[in-house]
Image (cartoon, rainbow, N blue to C red; front, side, top):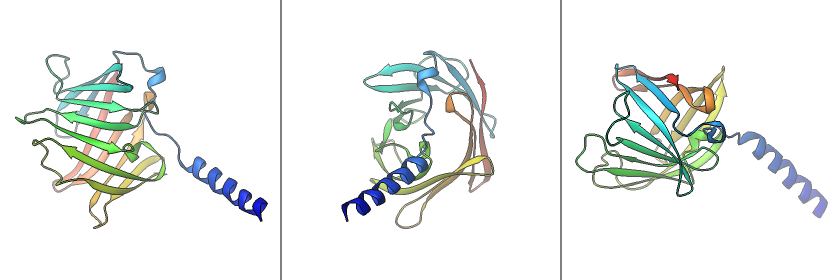
Amino acid sequence: MFIKFFAICVAVCIGVSAQAQNLGIQFASMPKGTQMIYGHSDGNQWVEVYMGKKGGYHIINRYKTTSVRGRPDRIMAFDASGRMVYYRAYGDRAQPYKVTYQPYSCSFVAGSCIQTEKPSGSGYVFLAGNRRLDVVTRKVKGRWTTVAKDKKGAGYAHVFTLGRYNLRAKIQWMSRTGLKTITLLSVR
């Protein structure tokens, strides 16, 4: 009986570990100070800079333009496996806000995952309270697809490809106004 139970546990663990491929950013090979220039389909461009490790997290600062000046409009924190655990946004709002992912953003893991989004700060207008999402990220025709839904069926979906350091090279999603695309233009 014990041997049969043990064999089932091993089979389940092998299946789960094979399914849970890490799609996190590869910070171990990314030099501190690396700059990523991104472009949006609306014409906007910005730079993200890897700042190194701080407080146990890998930090990326995002600036609203392609030059690194002034205060970043977003600070993103990633765990040791390169999965986003929170971001703090400043932007144009008078009040900054923070969104924490527990245990992390599931779009950085292949397979099924459950994440909770916890917003804080009066500048956040997208969610009222915490949101638990069932997330599935899988490879379809050479591109990664993430679909996230809450218990009411609301959520989001996007398609992405990976580039250097496992950075998102291209992300696409549908909005109310049509297809949107973010493209990694260069890494330096």
